[in-house]
Amino acid sequence: MIVVATADFELYHEIVGDLRDRGVAFTTVKPGAEIPDQADVVVVSGTDEVEIPAGVETVVASAGETRRAVEEAISILRGGGGRTVIGVDPGTRPGIAVLSGDTIVAAFHVPLADTVETIRQEVEDSPDAIVRIGDGARLQGSTIVNELEDVTVELVDETGTTPYLGTGARGMGDVLAAVNIARMNGEVVDSRDIEPTQGELQRIKDHSRRVSENNRTIDERLARRVAAGDLTVSEALAEHQSENNDGAENTETDGTE
Image 1 (cartoon, rainbow, N blue to C red):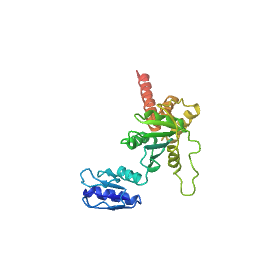
Image 2: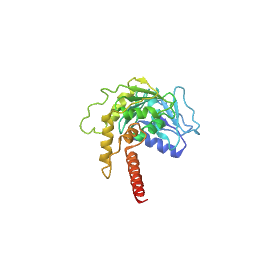
Image 3: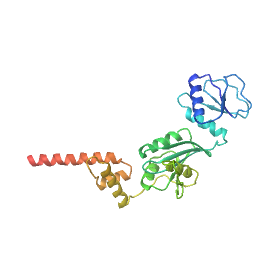
């Protein structure tokens, strides 16, 4: 059982709210009161003076940053206390799953541009964390691999990791695939250099035309920078328009001199 024992009013309400949201059974006691015999883990603040019985784990939490404390307490409760493993199903909007041991403690579905920062935040307090990235979506996956530093990264064969999705499960496929990827061993990599194919470049150019307000299509040079992760499609379109406008102004000036 999880026991909350803190005199910090703000922390108390945040922790209790988070535990209720997660559907986890818990009890509360005042600091100084006896910890119940059924306790497996006690959540306290850094300033609480609580006598913790032998064999009971302690989780120290801070107001405003309770999610990690709740995840740690749940992981201890379920016997998951293993290393943090993050699975990533790459794409334009990657699925991300965070596991502590065998327990899934967090999941995200974010734009590619936010993926690396999301991962960094999740491994910040886990020096032995490992990030496992699926080998599909080559261009997006290589962008994530190349931007991650100071963390172990494995490239995983993601064949068969996306499950069948029944009615009402739409949009969950990337996250569920990330969970499966997190649970598979891969090959440790430091970087991943991918030369985009002509087909991949053409798809980027076609996408730029579809999202452009004035039916513009970026050129191959900008498409390669998008493929490498140096630019988003929106940034490439803005640069393309700026270059063309500068060229038009120069042409007009040359013609009047």
